[in-house]
Image (cartoon, rainbow, N blue to C red; front, side, top):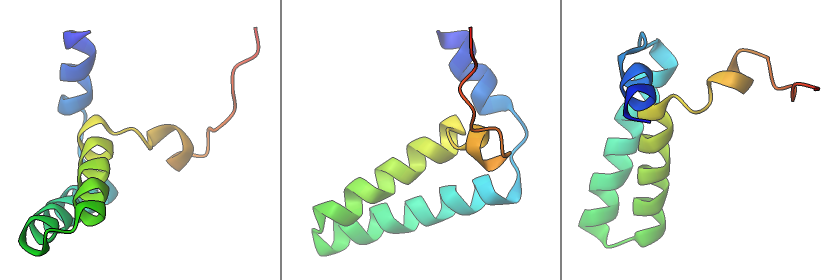
Length: 68
């Protein structure tokens, strides 16, 4: 499990992943300053997607579920 997380963190960071990380930090800081929990939750959600690169399957156009 830890090797999977480490490999996802070490994969090359493209522009879209960097934009998600920067926007998530802006959302988190703004959510803390304004005490807006929805904005804070959205920032954390984006940060998880940026760090774990969770959108890579659909972003590459490969959104199909493999058939067994």
